Length: 405
Image (cartoon, rainbow, N blue to C red; front, side, top):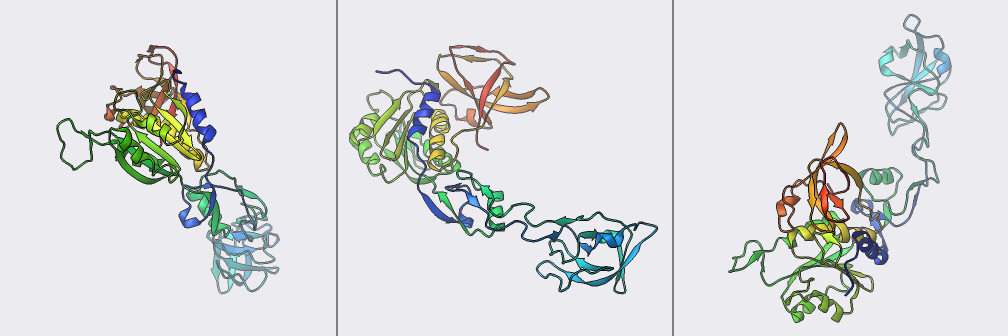
């Protein structure tokens, strides 16, 4: 039996088969968090016309040459340009047109003077400043030129990107759809919250955790259910999900115990195993395989192992299916306390992060057992600690992978 593979090799194996899902046309109002399937090219400039950056008066700078606090220039008020209602006439010599923020700059004007620098009375405006040409004018195409690529394929659509598309008049965009994820929880002992616990029963927290992790990964929970501790029950629970979902996440039953049937069930159902066992703590018995385009993740049953293996292995695969980048942000931080690494496997230690004068400092949570759910509370990152068993000393810099939010 082959030994466990490294964390990085496991991630590479997932990404080798996680191809982006087909593109669909999505209205802007439904596209938040999706990833573009093609470049977006502006078919018009932004801004579309020269407009005023503030309330004031559109003038010819040459008419105000030499104007100042002691030598104001008086111009005739020739009209008004409001947002959505351009002026009817051009600005001629010795004239000014009142203008509001965002309104079109009238023909003939090359400058806008702030209303605060003027006095207006009896159809005339007195100006005591000498502005430079172009002052307080936002030029057509200053933000985006027609024909410019404004968003690249693969980029996530956040509020700013959606606002830009709306400003360019785009109604819908081609995006990769959200991956559909089926969750199957294995174990006769698991009892949903709210139901009576029999002797030896354990509350099922993993269904709730995985549903939240799936949503946070930008995917859609297609189904969630349980599987009894027999090969027949496991096959019956998994068979409908394969092909219907883009990814299947099985929790528990992937080790070598007498009642662990997930690997045999998946083999029976035609799933090709890519790896089983990762040199990782927590989460060593993690499994990954695929059938056609469906990804299958087998996660250990302990709650922290579920969180860690989903974050490090499943979430990157779902990001790739969604057409986005599978790379999670990483940085380095100094350990606040010493940390005793007890095995030769890569350890993913839950830590809190703090920014100090000397840089980022990571403080390992005090209890790191794979059953200690509270070790995940307030954790900002996973410290990735490779190599042989040893003590990582306080102050030693280590690589950390940031957790979402």
